[in-house]
Image 1 (cartoon, rainbow, N blue to C red):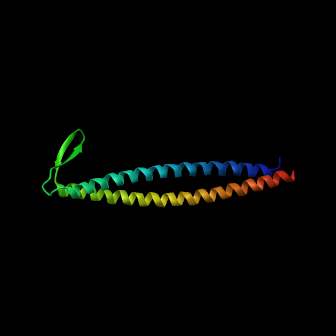
Image 2 (cartoon, rainbow, N blue to C red):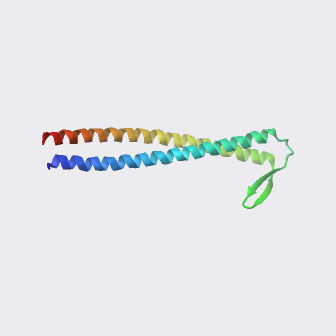
Image 3 (tube, rainbow, N blue to C red):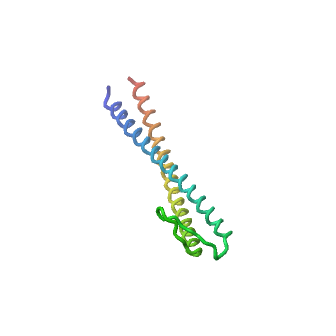
Length: 125
């Protein structure tokens, strides 16, 4: 076997492993995005419920095993801040997904080129 074919096979193995790693990272990012989406929807529901309450309504927050009374203004502020934080995380994960998608596509193209070069070298033999 020629040195060129051996080098191409090693490059193919390395690129393939890198491609699989990128795909796993992408899947994890998609999972994180879905979790964040779920959290955002939950917090928006809470926000909507707060709008229906009167200003003097009793609001309780679960802290460990204990329900603690909380001021409505404080509860509303906390939920608003949580929504802002979750939205910022969604934006970060979206950027990460876009980046991973670009890297995955680039690595896929490298794999195709290496496979083509390997087939051409093998056909010469």
